[in-house]
Image 1 (cartoon, rainbow, N blue to C red):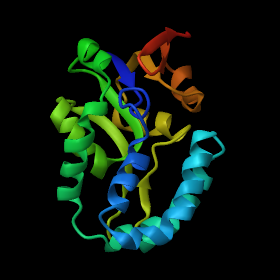
Image 2 (image 1 turned 90 degrees about the vertical axis):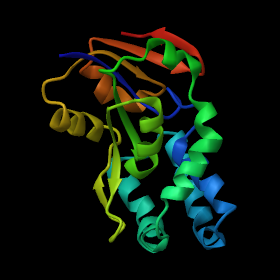
Image 3 (image 1 turned 180 degrees about the vertical axis):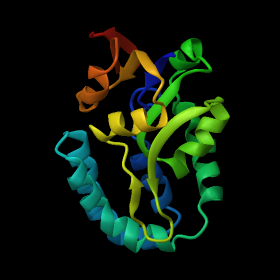
Length: 190
């Protein structure tokens, strides 16, 4: 089956979801403040593409294991976050959206679930964290995106792939056509 596959952050969503979520959350829970210096370093390394999959797992470990597992039920916070940030979904996507689209994102599924439901997206995959341990069950990042995509959608053939970053080179390699998205400008690069 031919499908269109989209990265989420900075492609469909105008920004980095995790950064926006942390900035939103930091005003609501002061316990997160002690993790801010490390989270800021992580955000800059991610923006500058200085991460390997292993680096990302290690970098997020103390935050996830120290804070996230003790944060309680975040579903209400996630709904409120998307109430405020849904407007950052880029309008061009609504014009091209298909029911068969697949979103592949490094953003965690507990944040993605709500916005995917609102957008009517049935096929998506994000990173997944064990709420009890704070350990990644699945890190949908760099070359792991291809591995996870193939595991979950073995019969899918990527006709068109949309991304904002060369970090998605592995996904680009398995797509027939690739489009680089910068804000609302979409450029075919393959």
